[in-house]
Image (cartoon, rainbow, N blue to C red; front, side):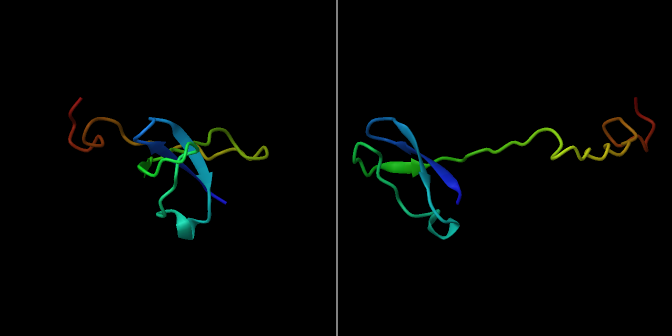
Length: 73
């Protein structure tokens, strides 16, 4: 079940709520009972390879601001 992060405008507290995706847009009261909250944009990052499986190497890009096709350097 996803976790959504909220901030309370009244007490400026940040808190998390676990709920189904179908309820992601529903309002949430802060732990202190205030209703003036807003959902924050949460960022999830994953690094490394999973269970020993190496990630493929990135493809060569040719470099340069235009991909290397125009000869600028």
